[in-house]
Image 1 (spheres, rainbow, N blue to C red):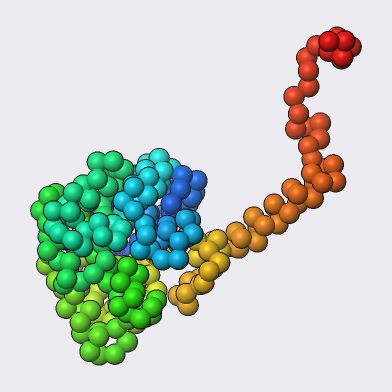
Image 2: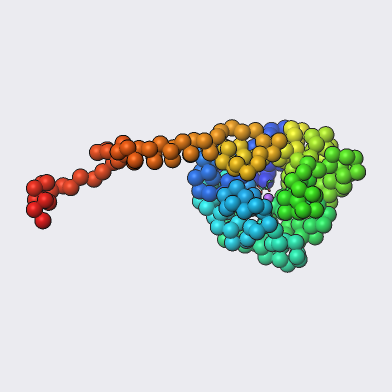
Length: 277
Ligand code: KIV
Ligand code: NA
């Protein structure tokens, strides 16, 4: 299929067509997502937890993000790729934010970057946009500042905090972001923000009334075993499939069932000639 772009995403919003996306961190997953017809792919800094085994997203570096974005781009050359800016790659200054967003584009050929936060990162969103790049905002449950939120907790569930998120959403659009991701907020708030904004609004754990849905591949495929958020629907149990395959392989080797004649390269000369060496 033809690669979708920003105009397609605006049209999909206006036509009421849902955009569907998933995270990917490696070449095969990216390729499978593209084959399946995914509208976008996020190379999330969740890669720290999902594929690198860190306890949070805080340790993830620019180098790790770039390297995984490069693999995903190779696997999905015709899909819109969102590069996720890791902790401390944009918080310190607008200059840092532009430089690091630029690295995602120059070194990994992403289509846009995403960064966490509302009004407090709007000057960075403006700076990256002014440099000619596309930015997606991300508010609600923001894992890079989960310490301040008291953990991985749903946000905006009371009117006061919902109001703060609405102000953040409007500020993000005004700063020039082309889209917004809401994470773990009530669907009532998601619907309100989606109607209020002109840019596409996407949900991860934020319910249906918006312009599209994102899930973390490790969650939906059953590859991430540390915990599963309430908002996840599991479509496969890859952990079980992999452990079973590894167990069968172990058993086959130990009992002589593998390898067999099907899996070897026989010598081409006569057996006798070989044995006489
Ligand atoms: O890193 C990530 O996968 C994300 C999603 C949780 C939204 O930012
Ligand atoms: Na992220």
